[in-house]
Length: 221
Ligand SMILES: [Zn+2]
Image (cartoon, rainbow, N blue to C red):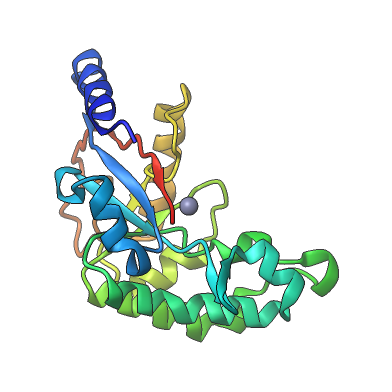
């Protein structure tokens, strides 16, 4: 892993785009299992942001991605197992401050076999996971390739204080500024301001937060 090269690259980007606030960061998969191993690769505290993600669940002696698990387990079991592990991950690691893509298992939902995904059926599990993440002071990354309105709504209702955008993109597409404006408009309808923090009053009216870009490589166990 070329950590020095990554920081050099970020420095060049910051010089080239001085109007942007560019953070360093990483997506860290299963941090509750791999904190010690990650520490051997890099000092996470040097990064501006660590997104914790949950890509795999335990099955037997191994761990598998949801797309595999949906072929082995009943569909509901995959979602419930995923949601049960989110609080374990939050309690088992101090190294991430943003939980990313809580809908990860949902993306592989086997619609053809079992019909469309209905979040209402799993509402209690999502709300419980969100409440525990919110209680731990973490933010929730909104992956906007799929704009599920129930995620920011339940997040806000369960005490979530902040959302983040764009740091699960892994690359910075040229269209980013335009899509960012769309994301901010969308999140503002859910009660979050341009800086990602939940609005408690009209305090962020007219506020001009500069765009936030987090080029984020993946670190997966
Ligand atoms: Zn991921």
